[in-house]
Image (cartoon, rainbow, N blue to C red; front, side, top):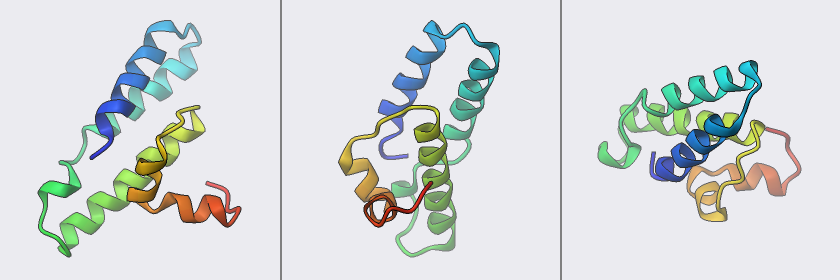
Length: 91
């Protein structure tokens, strides 16, 4: 994931300070999902594999946002999530 490093740092920092076991499990699951696929930018443009990985990246980012992560605007634009937020669509 292009913006995965910032997301990973946030999740690890949150994991280090959170005491709630349920939240810790959700953060661990998020970290596992983050490393499940290669970065989409390493795959051929227009390929089915890249489309699948990009879809996975959007889901991971949405999951992180539900946990309180506030991604930079650039990350939202790259993943196409900003359009839904501008239109008032929930994640």
